Length: 195
Image 1 (cartoon, rainbow, N blue to C red):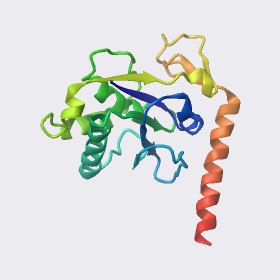
Image 2: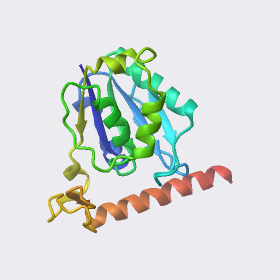
Image 3: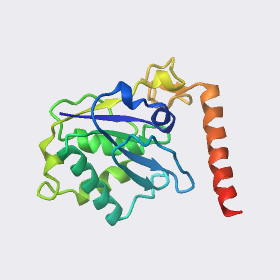
């Protein structure tokens, strides 16, 4: 059985492979201007870059590459870490797709990127990707409290909540400052490479 963990970029950077047995591969979903350093202990990493604006989705070739990668990971009985910037939209779209084949539904997918989910579903075929179709996996949302997230007073019942947007959790102020600093450092490092 494969474990599939869904998390934010911040959580992915802190993820300790030695605390989670087995071989791990990763799907890293970032904005086009972002980069991310990952642990060399991941067996393999598939990178996707597109904006989470509800309009942009990866190309058909990128989606096919993603499905081939995930199918290969599951066929090898490896675990999979999926992350995007906040860990609730683009990564959840892929997790929701994979979870639709699972025998146990463990995660509520409220804010997944619908366009990305539909693009994956359109390119999928059980004949091409039999390990995905087998559904022998469990999807886990990584506990966000450990990454600077706190429970919201609305408890996720208010989809109009300006703090959590109905997710039931929201980032602490210092967490947002950390993410902003991380963006600045990424841009500085790419700027230095061009000099």
